[in-house]
Length: 352
Image (cartoon, rainbow, N blue to C red; front, side, top):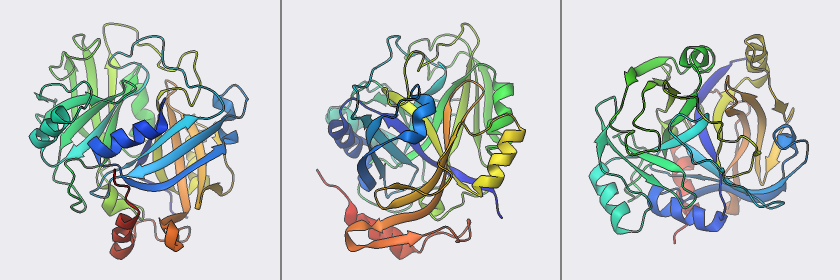
């Protein structure tokens, strides 16, 4: 059995107002291709919700120009709480999500002229790339990154998710998971100091160590060509003890709730993770249904409590309204989906 981490599949994000948030993400990030949108109980997450099964609405959305997806969710059995402490750079958990754009200046002008929240000035990141930040309606931070790695033209100034920034206590300890097991083993930069692209953010004038990682192996899985390359940036605060973003809160409360990875060979991967000290906290054990999508899901915690979901996909909708699905359980993990199937997804696009 082949075992590998194909790529980042999605970022999980809990919001206060689902319909409004989805519209915002369609407008500014082009996340207008839905895989599913359903309301269901979430017993798998009981270990992260104090043993009480919550009910939530979740929608997986993607930008067909390329990039990873977002799973946008909101609880329906309780009102999600926001953090009582304003988030600072490198607080523990995902604190920023990065999106692709082929034209940074054009995207920034579009954001400024169309009511995006918290649009920053352009600045350079440690790789020397010009970037800028904006927020969503819940105050979550997003960063636009320039790239030519897009799958197809859909006439939007943004591509999909390309990576995320995660606050950690000790980067060297965190690398034992992210680099050595999850395969994000190629260092794009590893720098320590004060950073101009953080200074506009809360806590951003302090000193940090930052390491950006990508996979040296090519992106795998049926959606590999669509997803493209992805990265994980680990950020360690050097001048203060970072806050825990979800302290006193549960999964489903507002914020970036988990990092989702597309995997192949879940059982063997679980054995490897357990041996390294990162056992599954929860495991669906068999195909879990979300609408017509069927997957095997597990969760682990990183060294500082950030939730990482592992997803092995069995069946995905290509065009649900036409009854077009794909069973990928026995496919070669490196074999991309046929181009016509990916192109067919444009017919499910939501237009506002």
